[in-house]
Image (cartoon, rainbow, N blue to C red; front, side, top):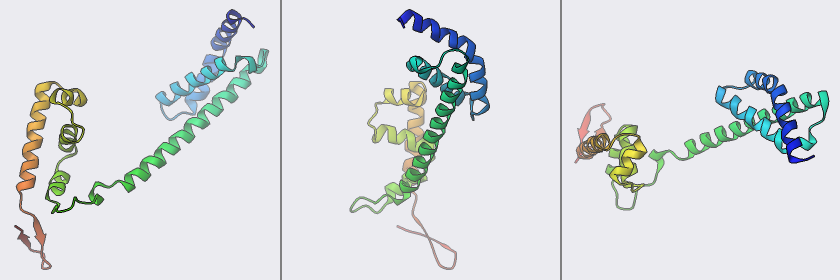
Length: 178
């Protein structure tokens, strides 16, 4: 089959089978994005395996089989990603991170006491070594807004660092540590 004949056959099958395949996939997908991805992948497989696609009316059930396998692969991939994310989340609890030698943990505790957004701003600047301009880009805000968020995060971090450690006494009272 010539490249022109292949393209013509693919375009014919696409026109004829797009509506039934997309309906099938959409009814079995959790989101429009998942459905769009599965539909696109189904037709990519059709293009790649056009020679394996049967002629005539047998092409329709063949392509439904392709769509079914694409959906199954998509679900397996999602389950693997979910399982990996759950495992990493349980293994990587920042509260369990070992403290550097000689540290009393004040910095780690002050950092942990900040809001998620303050921690992100400070971490992007300090750990990821972004410039202030890059910080603005990473946060998706203007440079003045990024500077303001950084300023506020630093002030809250300084306040958390300066706050005396609070120790609970057995009688339920509080004692301010040094």
